[in-house]
Length: 147
Image (cartoon, rainbow, N blue to C red; front, side, top):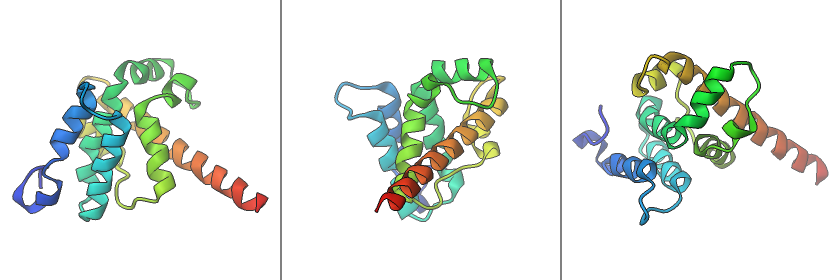
């Protein structure tokens, strides 16, 4: 079901949350806070990861230029610029909070992205979210070893 359908009533405000995050409206809180809240709603409402794809696309859109540059650079390592994006921050937050069912696959994300680079960009973003998850897991393991 599309976002905002009656079946997804608890998630009906997600599009407004996403729009506020991307617009950077003065009245809006930190875009990462809004996007994390939208993903929490997906998780709590038991929606599919497909429903999370527009949220992840919106997160990438906040720093679209950084992701375009990362895509042009190619390679496997993410630049510091890419790691400083809202998308990466939200990925780290979601990984740390253990939200379930909100990680989308490249094909789902590709459907939400615009332009001729949608496929490669979706792959890059999914890899970046995996990098963020790995980083959070490594930090948690390091903390556990210190205790």
